[in-house]
Image (cartoon, rainbow, N blue to C red; front, side, top):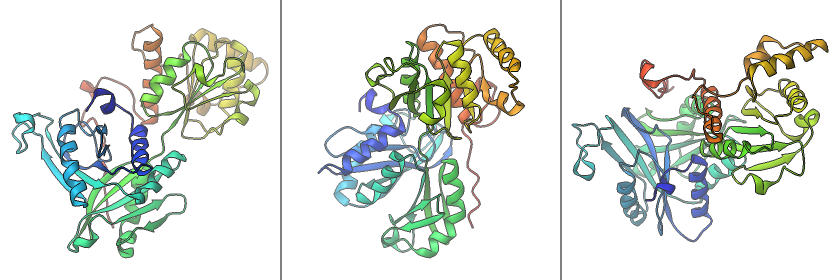
Length: 378
């Protein structure tokens, strides 16, 4: 597979699933369902393989993608799901390309022929909704293997696919609820059946307020980091979709009405980059009255201190909670000064905040890089 197909964000993988479902072609979805030890990706990572083309997405650092693409043809021919296990530890049993790749972990991958039942997953994702997908991986009743149920976190209800036992859905309800809320995935045994619960979370929203030349790199990098990117401008002539091809949406409004132009919620992260003191000031005031967890403001610290003084002169003071959500100067201290380096530092900070992480060197982090899911099946 090509580097371009390998390095796409998860949103494009699900778009690839939709392309298969809406065509006359068949395809296979490969999903990591379990990891023992260390691996490049965690459970829930996906790759879609159309029968007439290269795979889209990645489940390892490139170690297994070609291998999985080859097996996909066998899965299509059999018409049944299949689980493959790869021991990628230096002394493990799997020997990819004749060499131990040394990922230091054991990976289980589910390969399943794509059918129209998966459409409700891509529909939910496209609609900005979370969904939990429960798939039977192993059971004494072979006809149950591959059966699927869908969990709606809004109603706390399951929609059962053909062959999925209603009693099993009740047994996994609490665990499915927790994984879906966190957008996490894992497999476990319950009632003598092995299930894989895939919490498919809608992408978080990154809103960039401004239409200057520095907005384009932020939109591009934000999109590659799997945010749904919206650019909001205050000057209609500059708020044009063709100026920001990597943004999912481009809108125009005024600073005082910004809350009317967009539904800001707790899954929205905002960077204010108008480079206009008055526009920035009005936008920040409006945004801090919403539920957004992050408002990044471009500009030096002294500029914000001047802004605070003007607010205080008008009787507007910031609460501790508001200041905790306000990041200025925006971005991580990476030391770069080019537009893309600045954009990278800003998006990296947003990623850290969205994952509830204090950014730092991984070599200084104690324990595992990726958080593990602690399951307590009923």
